[in-house]
Length: 159
Image (cartoon, rainbow, N blue to C red; front, side, top):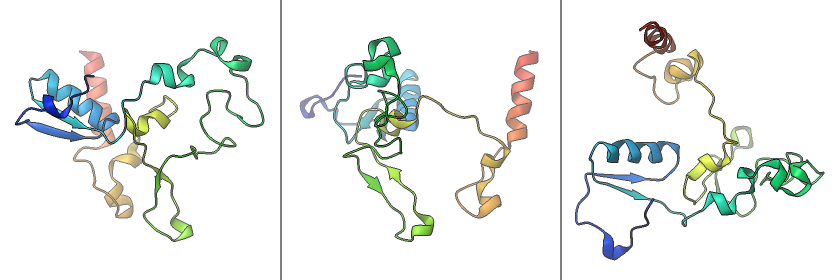
């Protein structure tokens, strides 16, 4: 992805995408592939995962061939401290000071956003995930159900 300096900015864009994580990155890609002029804004620096992230190395390229140690229970590529979910020097946001609702929301400032902390997995949604507002009053219900998606999947396999 080219980095655009201030002198390269265009006077107008069709869409401005804020953040280069999974949602922003895919949105920008899909829009540009359909001819839309997109400006993507990212708070982080130009991060090079190939040279800066050991998790993309194969175990044979890592110290101790990636085996875990007491300090790195998930292996050499583990960026956390003590195998937890805290990454040193990364900002976290709290929606509430109440310890009962404590949730660490990592706000990485880097190209690719929070997808850099996913562990390279994206789990499939289930019926529980499609209707959060109906279930607990939070968020928004999807306009379709899990069963709708399952039916579309079955039909496309039969075609």
